Picture (tube, rainbow, N blue to C red):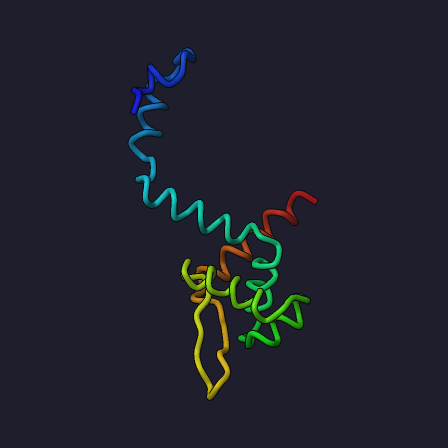
Length: 120
């Protein structure tokens, strides 16, 4: 990997700020995981699923009806959300019920909405 000087021919005005940013930077794995989390939440249907689950747990068929897509499509989206630990499930007989994985997910959604509403 090229050094910062080789990457960009930009002038450096505040080396101390660059050094601090580099010292505080996320490691590559955390940065990639955080990007994947925001990417998952950036999909409109997945965000609608998370918003619905913010209020109550729901099964795949109810989520499919709410979003207006097939159960297969919802299952695919839920699989991705589950991989990122945004949703969790519990089984009741043959039915899987989904909910937000923890309060952090709800807080992320709430903070994003609060941020958006402050701009209006």
